[in-house]
Image (cartoon, rainbow, N blue to C red):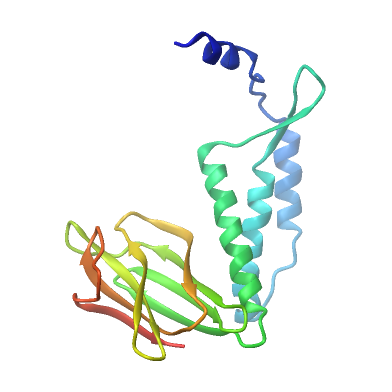
Length: 196
């Protein structure tokens, strides 16, 4: 191992297990959060609760020099990325011209939101499509003039609030079965088609 890298590892802060009281107080605070009764508010708040969980996952340690170091595990870092997607979705949902839709593509669900005024949109993807080996669910943004643009391919692994950006000019979202590497144009079986 390179001497500089070895020195860096040796100088890193020692991991510390947070006290059980911290976890208990966080869980009590989550339990004390008001629950909502209507579906639209519950759907919006579902994403907000994930932000609370992601923030609670950070553990702040005091290093030898007296400065704070925040450490995340790989899963907690993924939560941070998820929180960014949730923030993006909420911002678009608040737009006056927000258009929304939902789709199910063989087990992968998409909650779609688009704002032409903001010039952006996206789909929050959950679940996993049940497709033949080597295949994926490719998501296409279809514009008013019929032009299509790939937003990416949903693989067969499980997805939990994965944000897939879409252009603000998206008029409908098409999901087709394509090879996992993706296709240049939609050619496979249509799994979902949502007009926004």
